[in-house]
Image (cartoon, rainbow over all chains, first blue to last red; front, side):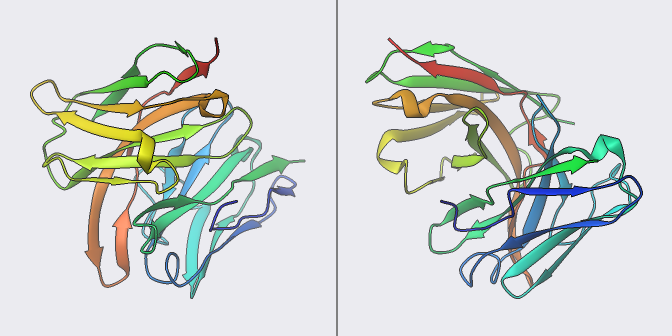
Length: 110
Length: 126
């Protein structure tokens, strides 16, 4: 049972906008920055969003992140079939003195 | 651009110690404010952070695994390693090594994984 909670699944049709939530507490999301990782089937995760809302070089601007209080969100606009993947939020937890991952959200493009 | 590669036995017997090494190429693990982590993922499940090490040797571990985990670094070989003792079937997973910078700023503590190995499957079975 992760201390950071994500919905297990999300879905959308091509071209739609979908959002994935990530809920935590004052000791993790409330105090520190949130990163998002995309894991395509059979591959290692890849950093998608860092420091709440920053995109690494090469990540399309269709992906955006936000944070408010103890929650964060990942938004994907103009959904494409290649976006079908597992998405994880992660942050530092001051009480655990370590990284905590959300349970992951499986995104299906219908 | 740093590339990471995990290596070690793919099969470990119950109660024994799992040992993996991550070798970095394309850059030095001693450069910058980089922390080097181990992360695992059981089949069909989510990611679990195991722990990290700084090149000074300072470590942080997941409290749920702390009593069984040791992470070490060998800067001369550009490697860091994981040892997990007293393994059971529950430790069967793909193990990833990963690295990124860690720092405090006005938004709190940042620690993200810029670099990932491809992962290696470790099965615990007799």
